[in-house]
Picture 1 (cartoon, rainbow, N blue to C red):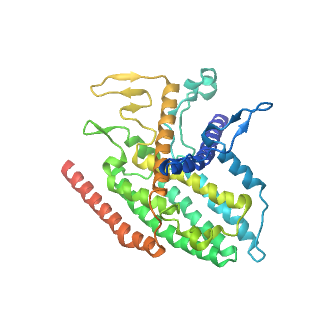
Picture 2: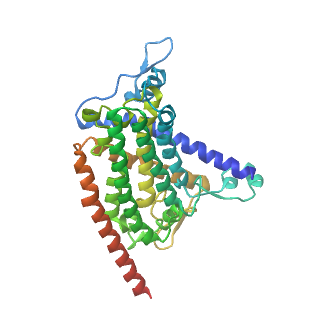
Picture 3: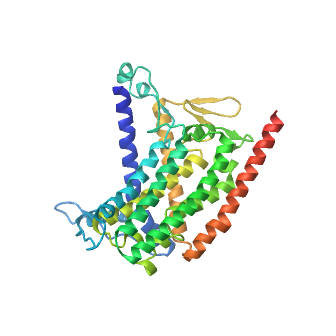
Length: 382
């Protein structure tokens, strides 16, 4: 029992640290990537001075994220005179907390054997092994949608409790938009459920460890390329990012549902958005990019075509899997930021029309075609 608690405590600390680092780093990536795309230097003013010297560590503006956090913490906390106090205070946490909880069911590595990783503790662990996943649930994918649905309540709660017409309009926009695109996301992953026959994210990743046609990795994007495009589009809309940022359109609603929030309460809303970019990256990696897998790789090393085996130490396998997962997530996050600085904003009626009249029918078509192909495949094998 103590061994299990210690391992899962390490997993929780790792997950929190990873998400916080990603959230902070992505604020810099957003500025720097925007600067590169518009041919300017970008964030390069924040620095740390080495004590008793004139040496300034700029480091490409990496300290801007730290400066933003300090600024949010030190700002005065203004509150509207007429507002629902309890709902107003709860809303940022109802938005922020579920975003963190979603990562609990996402596998970020293969099987961990602490006894092999730390031989001095081998007797204490007694041969126990652990999947690198905080909560290994059979219904992991359902838990993802359950937690993500809570953020809808948070945004609507923030808009209503502020007693501000711009906030209320932003909350209404957020609720209708997020519900619309969450339905599309659910329909796109149904195709993957048909292919893999499970909603366990760990089992899905395990089934993506092989190859297709002897060459292509058996990733979800190979089996469901159309669903991958639909899922990413719906996920960006779910996160309310440009071109779908109508709930907080500054030219129309000031800051939308969090107009009346200041200091770290506003910081929680903004930080949740950047962490959700990382969560979308982690989910897309898990569902469509093989998770922590590389082609021909398993928990013992690499098994190449023809039966040749390249065995690796357990520590090396664990490290490679962690790094592969992080690199894939970072690439997907960078793509989301690329979209944010490439496309113009929709009108609000266009956003909902795009969901219900374009993406929803396409998701249903993809699901129907997948079901027919799986049925015909089963009939042929029988």
